[in-house]
Amino acid sequence: MDRLFVLKKISRFTLGIVLFTILIDMIGFGIVIPVLPLYAEGERFRATSLQLGWLLGMFSLVQLVMAPLVGKLSDQVGRKPVLFLSMICTTIGFIIMGAATQLWMLFLARVIAGASGGNIATVQACVADITPPDQRSKSMGLVGAAFGLGFVLGPALGGVLSACIAPYAPFYFAAVLAFCNALFIAVFFPETLSVERRAQSYEKAPLAEVFVGNQSILISTILVAYLASIAGFAMMTTLFALFNAKRLGYGVSQTGYLLTYVGVLGILIQGGLLRYLLQRLVEKQLAAMGSLILASGLFLLPFCDNFVSLLGVLVPIALGNGLVTPTLNGLASRCSSPQIQGRVIGLMQASGSLGRFLGPLIAMALVGWDTPSQYGRTPIWVGASLSLVAFCLAVTFPQKKTPPSAAALA
Image (cartoon, rainbow, N blue to C red; front, top):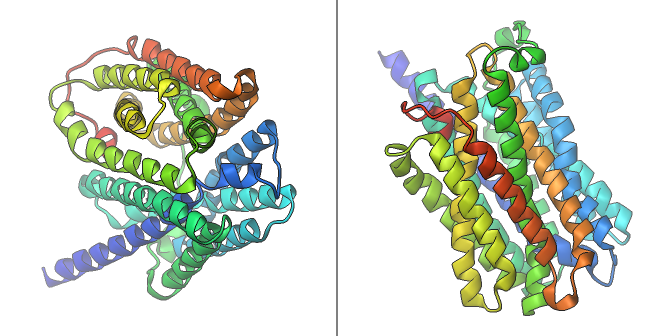
């Protein structure tokens, strides 16, 4: 009994360290969101729209490739060294970004950041290492809360630092955070994967098994809906700082505050409202509802001409995204058998990364179609159309009144 109590205390301590690591990591990530588009388009780099699309999407493209490799490496050598190395690489990437004098240096920094961004899978593996299966959903929910809090704090910090010090100041501040996180991991982070477990060989279901059987069409449909929804939302976030600057004359600080507002709404929706709705509606209904609400918010965004109207339109955007993302993950988890569930979750993550890569590319390729007074209207409306595609696919899902899945609640 005493031994069990001690083990529980150790697990809680380790989980606390994991959550702190995620929080610091996401603050550093969120800091650059309102800053990078205007920074790259400014006098120093003069990035074209297409170059900016590639620059913003590069992180997710490299993360898509590296995440499974980083996850496999952590299975072989342990979680701690992989997390430490990823934080050192993140530090280097932010330093390069702050010191960059040419556009190719920004691309190099984004590649390094994307490669080290593959540590998300390692963090999730840490949680799985130390959490019993019946408590895993709750722990993953705490991980989601840490992500959300980091996204809330990061953009506001980025906006303030850029406005009060210099446009490159947020990158150096993020580098300091990442380096402190690396030191914290080196000193306090306990290894969660034992040597014995690293030596074990697990047979994984072949990827082809996901697309065999009765569930194959449904899983494929969910993956496409998720890709469309993520890409549509990414098109908005890509253009948001530029839209605010060119249409409304807002600086980085105002954009940072607005993104923080979206982050707070997201926490309230996923942390409270979603759980309430899942007790009364099935995931199919919430996925369809979320897609439609997101599409309506994106459609209205180009009509905003002041701060108050932006605050109003960002509510359906945050609400729609906060409903559709977890419920599609929940549906994917529910419709897959235990033998292929890990593969399905991995495919959902890959689909999300692909959407976050394609969204910026499409957005910046279409932005030239608009007149200066209507900047961003066409790509944002295309993003709304992608959300409508997700809605049309969601209404085709089978409807079963069963308890909400752990993935949706998390």
